[in-house]
Length: 371
Image (tube, rainbow, N blue to C red; front, side, top):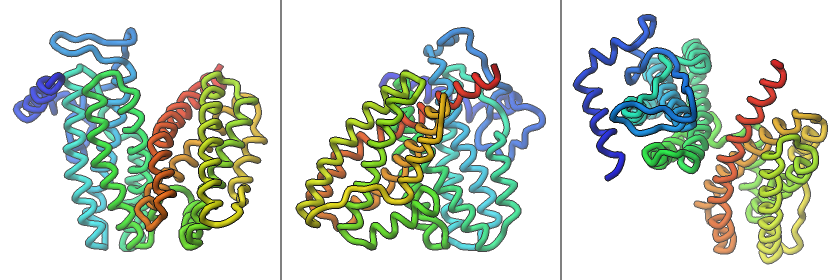
């Protein structure tokens, strides 16, 4: 199979030459906290790609994806090891052990691809992981269990969205393959994380406390509450998109808003038909939380419009995708399940693009502020 031999060879070299590889780690690194060896310092690519003898050509964007995947798995291993020491609940400890085992394996696969592609990886923990580890190490008992599970739910939601983006945007077949297979594992982790989090008193789904309360109310409200929640989300996406089409400064933001607005306008009509058949005359209006998000975008000006729009849309899509995926398993009508099955893949693709846009406009604004 194309691409398998270089990865397999690199993995065997990792096992056979552990001492040599560890010599490449910076002397200040605590290797007991690192699931796999990493090279010294970041790499600077002179052009869009870098070639190395006996290795495939790797796009600069793919090199970034590889580093992101390695960093994500390393964070889960670090947090899992802290949880194995400090967790009070046996289910949390079992979950932490699985995180260490699974993410070490995932990390080694990505690291082997980095080695075979001559992509150099930064050593040690990043600042975000270090801060999270210190915060968790200051907790114990049930407080630790809740904080750890809350963090791991949030991180796995982000990781799933990142892998979905990599699977669709990566240039290398090996990068796309690892991202696709990784999604299955991360999705399983996320389902389990939500269950354990719920059991220890933490959040079971993504989003802030208000979003979780709204999801709970929608579920408790039966078919009418469920469709009202979805229709409000769809109307919000249309309102945000139409404003971004007019006000955004970035051409890509405007194109993305146009596509998103058109899709959600079409989906809204289908939900209206479903609601009419099941619940009589449906209401289609924004709830108070969604009105606040529209007002937040209305208050933005200049290049802030792009950043605020991308952030709101990405967070809203992530919450809606998680909600629909969970409720797809509930006892919903065949018509509702059919609409959800139709929309979810497209929403997941929109989510990946929204996260990518969020990073792009954020970087652009930072460059403008420096200049």
